[in-house]
Every structure is written in C-alpha cells, then in structure tokens.
Length: 303
Image (cartoon, one colour):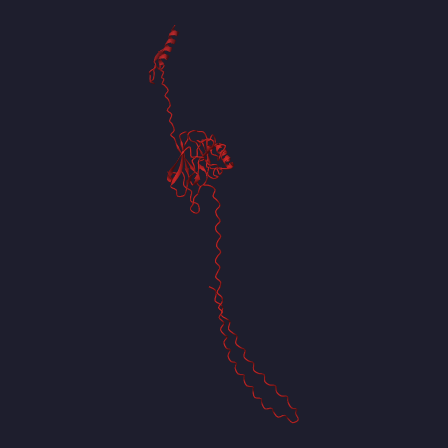
C-alpha cells in the first residue's frame, strides 16, 4: 500500500512539472516532496534560430585589356547577385555557349541565352562600357568572347562550375574550335557605363603610333614602309675651263758666242821641212737650251 502511494506521488509530481498550455514560454516549476526531499524541473520552449539572408553582391569581371581574357575567369555567385562585366581595351563580347560547344552561341538553340553585343574601349576614353547580368540560377554558365579569334585564344570563363576541371575542359574545347561564331541579339543583361575611376582595371598604355588595341582582332601585318627615294644625283662637275695656259715666258736671248780667237800667224816653215797639216777649225759654241714651259694651273674643284 505504501509503495502504491509513493508511485502516485511521483507521477503527480512529474505531471505538475510538465509545461502547461498558456505558459508563453515561462518557466514551469514543480516542487513536490518525495521521501522528504524537494526537486525542481525546468523547461523552456525552443526558440527558432534567426536565419540572416546574405545581401546580393556586385561581382566585377574585367573583359579584355592587354591580354584577351576574363579576369577572373571563374566566379561563384548566388541567385540575385549581379555580375558586372567591365570592358577594357579592345572590342569584346560576353556570349553564352553550351558546355561542349565553346565558341558557338547558345542562342542558336535557346533564344534566352546571354549575349552582350560588341562593346569597345579606346585610348583616352573616360567612360567604361558595362554589361550587368543578374544571376537567376546556380547552374554552371559557360561564356566566351565572340570577337575575332578571342575564344580560341582562351577568352572564356565559367560561372558556378561544378568543379575546377570544368573550366580546364572548356578551355581545351575552345582552343580546338574551328570558328568563332557571334551572338544573334543582345539579351540576358543591361548595357551601361561607369566612370573610368570606378572601374576594376587600369587601361593598357597606347601602342606605337598613339593607338591602343583596336577591335581586339588579330592585327593585320603592318604595311611595308615605302622604298626610299633614290638620292638625287650629284651635279656634274663643271667642265674644266678651257682657257689656254699662258704662253711660256720667252726664253732669254742666248748670249752671243765669243768670237773665235784669232789664229796666230803660222811660223814660216823651215827650209826643207814638209808643209804642216792645217789646224782644225774651232768647234762652234753650243746654243743655250730653251727654258721649260711652266706647268698648267690645276682645274678648279667642283662645288
């Protein structure tokens, strides 16, 4: 009998300790004497944990510049985030494709696919063209530039890839594409402008000749410089003056030859001696050689 009474008291205490309707979260307390001891049971209703929603983010992506790339080329974005494509030097697009068909617009099969159109940036420009795209789902999105050979050169990116290998594989597919196809119409975002000072890039320095990157396509080979004009022939030297050289100075008159010495009278021959041979006539004096003519004056050097 005593055991039964004890069990009844315990059960009554437990029932009183349970939260009662209308408690509004107030602590329920039950105090009962069991075997001469007091105990207390407290309980509270569970409060819901507040969940804070993350604010939407603006994610800048630089398109083009000194190199034909997207920076960054991989983005993780939540639904409601805005990816702002900022177009740097050159002429570029943001065009959506299927994962296995890089460089081909998805608009060929899905008219709602993304395409920004061609947005250029030139040297000295103070406003930057933008394309603002709101993320509507977290599925992977594959994008490329449809200008010239930019897609084949690696200007591709992936938003919300399932893994990093997806970006690597997409880059390989784009490099093997035989052609780069342009989008059909502007869709999937809004075209705008921001001041250059608010952009996420610094423009590339101008190239030689003061021109930056033009439309971003492969530049045609530079025209060969015109052949240098043949140098003007030097004027012919004026003919040498035909003035006759001055006549040679008249040679001085030769000194008159000395008169031959008078022959001494021959001694009369001795008697009986033979007649002597006549003496030879004296040799005439040599004439003076004429003076050499002066050398002609040198012709004047051509001017």
